[in-house]
Length: 276
Image (cartoon, rainbow, N blue to C red; front, side):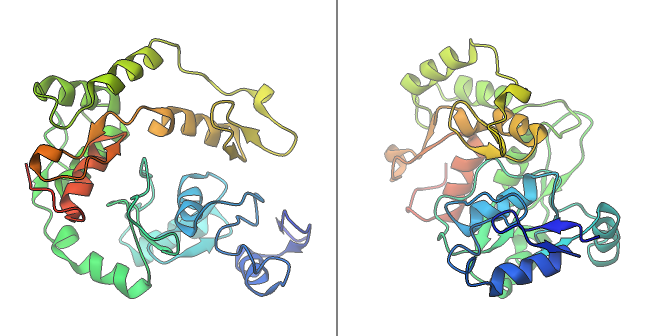
């Protein structure tokens, strides 16, 4: 019996690849192909957001390095072992997509939280010193992982995956304490965020099911599973943007909800801010 159902039209397919090909060629789906998850039925604002969904959702076995879907976890694991030396490129999904990426970008590096217009651009990025020169060692206790950029180190610490037990909240507190002159932090937004944190973090239950998916009562984002929705609730999606690109250092003043997002912005050099 076919296993994979196209949610928008109800058709069934024997593999995810067949389902994806259906989405590419069917006249009824071609308009939003690249933004719609055919398995879940959800439509996203950009192809980058759709890829982030593939990376985060436990319903999808997706290799972002190859832009390839797999029918089963075992097939995905075999692919990782044979093509990527067993590395899990999508185990720690990013907190937020780089805001400077075009909505049409479809090739995604989950480690650096960057998207690219073509596979060749992504390969060029992988061959750059960002990935080949892993010169930054995680400062966390009992952790010896190395990374290609400072922002990647911070993102690792924020993810909660570090052996030291570091969390995004602790990273934020340390950054705020160190930034005595409020060069990169916004005191008003910090106060608002502290007020938000004083309220117990919501936990999604079956009561959040709207008839077709699990819906966040705060921002109304929908997820296929409770696990995905609770992961969304634990992310910085609803956090205040307490970090800012420092205008004192020729920056643009853009706000970010994570320190890694700010540092990544500085590394990109997109606004001319001086390194600090």
